[in-house]
Image 1 (tube, rainbow, N blue to C red):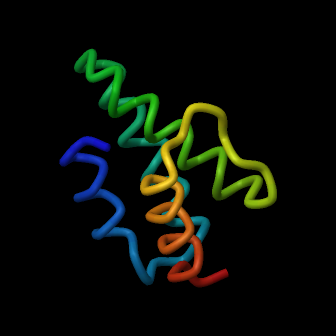
Image 2: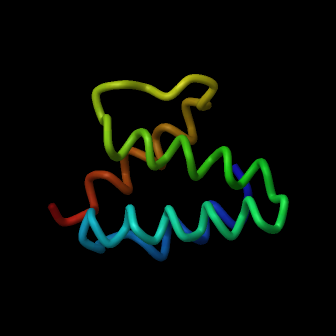
Length: 77
């Protein structure tokens, strides 16, 4: 996981789920525009996971999935 991704996750903890997903979409767009493809991929996986918590996104490491889960739990519905 990139440092940028860790920063974003830490900033989003405790936010409302809808607000967090909107922010993730914005960050994803910026990452794509700046050709930060690894960050964009991680953001896509996190967005997918938050929208489909029962389904593990492909190619996500266990430690990254753990951070995704922590964020999901901390978000307000």
